[in-house]
Length: 339
Image 1 (cartoon, rainbow, N blue to C red):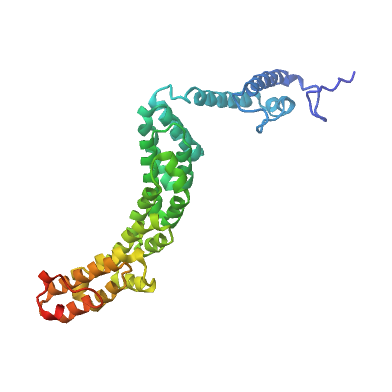
Image 2 (cartoon, helix red, strand yellow):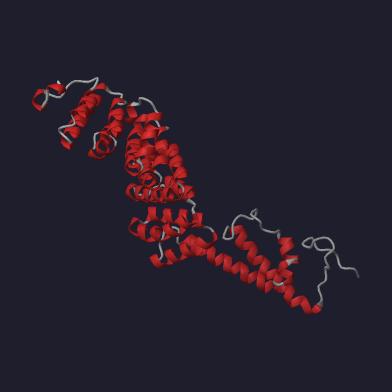
């Protein structure tokens, strides 16, 4: 008598397994039932998430190797139970640290987000959970993902969020300063509302590292920012550039024309003893480029005093420094030529 086809089997499958495999077939049924129970209960995720149908399990992999399927499913269930049971870090700190480190190799972004979640729930463990992950993640150069996760971590203490954000930005600035600066500039307003760190402070973190690596690029980038944020950053970077390569920096200043954003750097550089000694004409020319009349007048007096201190006999340079402005105060005049 021809056996009737089981609805659990795919078309073409042998409905009657060999006698020597009936014990194996029974194990396959048991494995399928166990796995199906785990799937339906959510331990192994949603049944829709890459899970084969029960028919395929019974007639396919479980039938072929039920022990392997059962062992694999058991291991996955144990892992899922471990994660589910420690979402609040209710187990020992070392267990949480070990689980995070094991996840780092497979999915570092998920490990980072989970560490931040636990840090929110257990502030007393926060640094012990998060700090060991920083260097490995920085080396992977997933700075954007790290910063976005920090931004989105609900309940994280502001001091911890700000510290990790600034440290990550600083490290990013060492490896890719243009990208780090663009990230900080583009997200400064939104980050400020979440972390308590102002947009200017975020950009200052990047600017500080960048100016020490490539002062010219840092200066040019800062010059493109809105004045309220960009001006102090540009002054810092330009001062660094002037100290490292004054000739190139002064050429860039001249190319900008009269610009109030440059006044502070010009005053500091042009009235200094070093430039007045080495290139007095450059000092005089720079002072004349100061946009603000009151600032320019103070700079002229400062440069005249510097020339006088260098060589009191060279009144010609003092006269040039004061040209177009007011003479030195009466009590400072040492020659009728300076009136």
